[in-house]
Amino acid sequence: MGLDIERSEFTEADYRSFRNQLQGNLQALQQLLNRPGFGEGEATIGAELEMYIVDQQARPLFVNQALHADVDDDQLALELNRYNLEYNLSPVPALGAPFSALEHEVLDALSRLQQAADPYGGQVVPIGILPTLKRRHFGPHAMTDLPRFHALTEALAQMRGELFCIRINGPEAISLRSRDVTLEGANTSMQLHYRVSPDRFADLFNAMQLATPVVLAIAGNSPFMLGQRLWHETRIPLFKHAIDGRTRDVREAHIPSRVSFGHGWVRHGAYELFAEAVHLHEPILPITNGEDAEAVLAAGKIPSLFELRLHQGTVWPWNRPVFDDADGGHLRIEMRALPAGPTPCDMMANAALLIGLAEGLSESIEGRIPAMPFQAVTHNFYRAAEKGMNTRLLWPEADVHNPLGTYPALELAKALLPVAQEGLHSIGVSDAESNRYLGIIRRRIEKRQTGACWQLKTFKRLLNTELRHRALTLMMKRYIEHARENKPVSDWT
View (tube, rainbow, N blue to C red):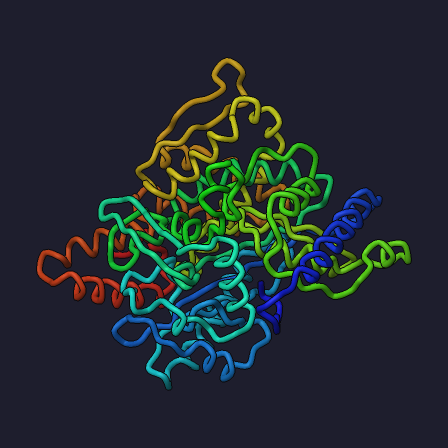
């Protein structure tokens, strides 16, 4: 979806051509994945950081295109709503101190963006969902004026044929209707990318799925939407409801949503996930580049698989396979569940825990899967998003005498820290690096404070003396002050 798209209306011939290209792309991908040596190379870690632009009262500031032009950085991208931006971090080798390198790049990017925002009276803030959002901050006027965003809105609306309905339960449940996708723009994330070799993909992806709810439970940073207290990580239900393009008949037939945690454990490798996306979901942006992928492959070159990559960008599982034709072609796992914020060091600690756990669990994952129905890990995911640190999670042990138990999320996360440490060590992350970032996680667990917990506690305290809207504003001002210090959220007061 980051591609430059110049059209928003398509014909049936466009869809037929696109489907044909998709099938050719899939066949070429299957051949590539069977080619000896394809995708081999050092493990690398990258990320995309989405962020808000707000004014001095912590309200959305509609200046993303002006900032984008002023900064003039190829790594900076426009996002769906006019008060959001995305910075694409440079991938770094996993060997050594990858999380420190990424943290330093985030700090530098935030500093430069803040300098650019100053003349507009703006502030750049990484936070999952801005608590001060109001209904007037959504709608066609709030959408960044680019053809790809208009095309997405029109395609999903045409597919659905009705209003987008959003209902989220919680302490202060909300129910909304919209004709466009700008409500989804409330969500900002730190999306991680981890390069993996094809022969390890299935075990690593399954381990990533198993680990994601554990990390999400102790990383929540989105407890408000439109000023209402909802889930600890409200991004999860909001994204699902705001994007789900299925009609009522399709939902009742149990056809999978384009936004999901997945449809089952991976059995063989990456190909089945790409094939699922093609066969389960109709194209919504049928744009082709005319490449004959199989002919390119037969000539000894790496095809771009343009149509497959574009289609993958319109299907949104929380963990997603990525094909990239760069560097001789390779695979990555994109992890999309973690929120932006509160600080660069917190985000990198989340990344270290998730990648460390995936690596540490990958060796035993085949022994754990039989004790963990996929519905159970999906249940874990949504309970972690809803209850955060307060949830209990199902967990499969490799021990056949006690295969499946239920544990408080904090206890489970703490018990798994040595597994994450071992996983990071196995890919060459230095001991000092893993000690630093897993130490941030350990303190967060001990203090029982995520970004979501801090927001809820601070808001509750302010509400004793302030009106609701004022309490939200004051809370956000304090959040911004703390975030700029890059001090772990566990230490915020």
